[in-house]
Image 1: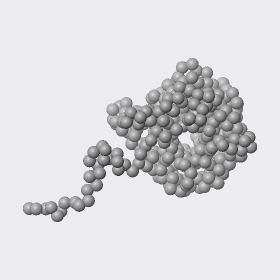
Image 2 (image 1 turned 90 degrees about the vertical axis):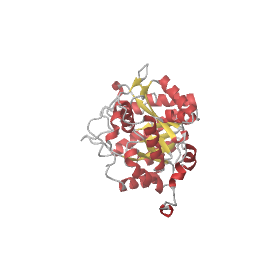
Image 3 (image 1 turned 180 degrees about the vertical axis):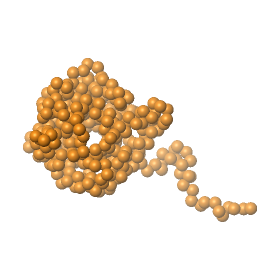
Image 4 (image 1 turned 180 degrees about the horizontal axis):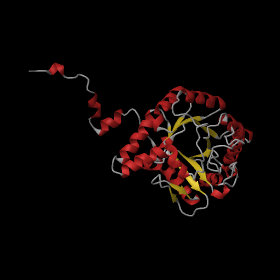
Length: 333
């Protein structure tokens, strides 16, 4: 019996027949320029210190950080986001090492700027959590709560010392109300109008930050639920977005990336400024752990997660795989 008429006329599989065909019709493309490398630099070490929960990631020395920056640049990565890890003895309640011109982050900014100049966008984490003995992102009041407005004064100082050190972009990440506006004013006051602000617009109180706490030697006591966003909320992110834009954000970010692709897509549809997403330590660690067990194909999983983030609307992706992925693009993988 001739059943020709029952065959489908539309055959989407025609566009999936060969690698060349799939590449030609791909709707979403990753490029090295989409990627930003987060990097940790630790004070007082002479060799890179591996981070056990993040296989392949280290706390850099000043020398190895410079080399990592050059390697990222040569691979085509657009930027590097720097996190400083001070000696424990230098942590205090106010996080003063974070505003010391000779603190580890400011020194690292100068090192990297001297190494790569303007060829790589140098970004800095603008937050107190690495520098406080209590591990919170701000200073505490008499009742042990994070004091929003007192913390803003500290952020203003941080912005100025980081700008003086030569950073191109500051990333206020503490989720304090009004932080973008205060940082913008602080930068403009010292003539650093060209320093951009990457606003951590939607930063959720996530279980996936665990490995990062090891990476920065966190002294956190308690949690950050009173200032980081509730994972249940989306409309709240849109309110934060409107406020950050009003206060002068040049770029906005969603963090984490993978569990919040719906938030990322909503933000990307709503703005005319560049949108970033941070594929955080727990997202990285899950893939590496599953791959080490042989449960997933590591390279395919990395590219799939990054493609999903890009497809959701991120123009820039902060990922610990940035240099590796960019190098594989260069080899045509």
